[in-house]
Length: 583
Image (cartoon, rainbow, N blue to C red; front, side, top):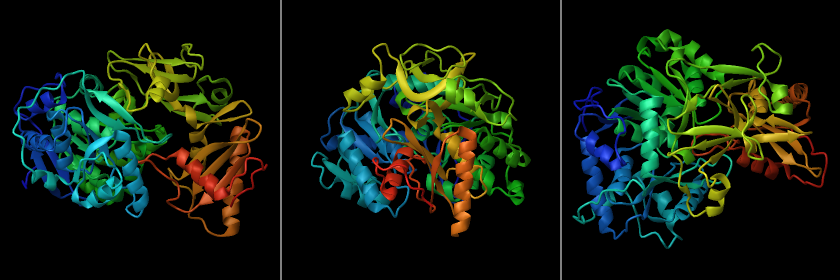
């Protein structure tokens, strides 16, 4: 292994995603000196590969894939640990004309059976012809594939490397053919495979690196995002390649344990572009201490992208304040909006402007579906972040339940149209037709409004809790709980349970370390009172132990799974009312 990271400055004329296919982009990047660098949990360099070496390895793997007797368009499942071999195998599939798709590494190694079942579902759902995993995870993969007769071969990169080569000429990919499958995170349903064409991904990447990020010479990326998530794969595997940027990686699980290593990496290697969901910034702000500032210089971090979940401005404001002594500039924040069905990005806010927050009246939002601007110190407000304008050649509009386009500041369903959209969900025409209209509009499942051509997201449609005709946002209830000193961010889940009168019972499940019957009951009573005062509804509150609330492979809270777990614990009986209070 080399001792030095790949260069930030390149010896190539800079090209920003003006390629027809992914392999064409790697072919060009391979003529320069930039590449990928992998660091361990202590910040030590553990692997380096230039794009030239990556291309050589990918093409060698491709010859071995072809020797396995695979056909053009066959699907290859890859467990996506943060390793060189995942990227090489992903591009090997494209050189060989096959469709790769990424599968997650386990969130919790103690959940053996759950992880094996997850892999089995993804192997079956993606109709994988072969499946490959690193040494650490091959046992899980073999177990998941045991009863799937359609899989021709299961192995590790090393075992693949030991096979003979086919020694055939590669055929250039067509812009119209599928490039890969991206499975959704599964926060509101079981993950579905999204089919992304070469044309769609190159369109999205062009919009990202040219318009969203305005990539320039001297930029360098840093990422802890998982390769199996669209932001990690498209944003920080494919994005650097199509713009010939060097990129520095740490594993997601290493970031979770030592989040400041991400900041140290940005500081030490003078990285200028790094993204995170809000919880990543919150983790860093919580861990940083005054002594850390001696080794942190974040003054060159020009784009601190934020997305992948609802953006709470307070989290980012706390991060900016905590890291200001390290030179972090709050204007570096770049809120954006995206989803797997649109390849990745749908909109970006303005570069160099930081957060643009609109404070709106929560009651008007819940009762009338209108964003009424109020002062930030009003008694009950929603702080909604501006996620910017649609990428070039793309459109965003807001419609009501009948499909009628809504005026500015009127809440409705968020629809997106443009060349980056998916071809559809794999093996699921009904689901595809449910979200993708004949005239090309994708129903994102999100709610929001526009103001002066900018998108403001208010939440997921499936996360609305409807009580007495009022639309209550689940995240508002969760934020109320997280504002309590006993509750940490991300440790609350709110949802509705249908009762027998076409209404919903509001449920709030809270992870809490508080012990003692009287102390716990006091917290329950306080939360119930605050919910009633703020939203005018009664609420069932359940306190659970830490790590009870389920999350998706990308780290998002899964309200669907949380609801399922609550029902199992509560032995809910829809004929019995009212629901017993839990403590």
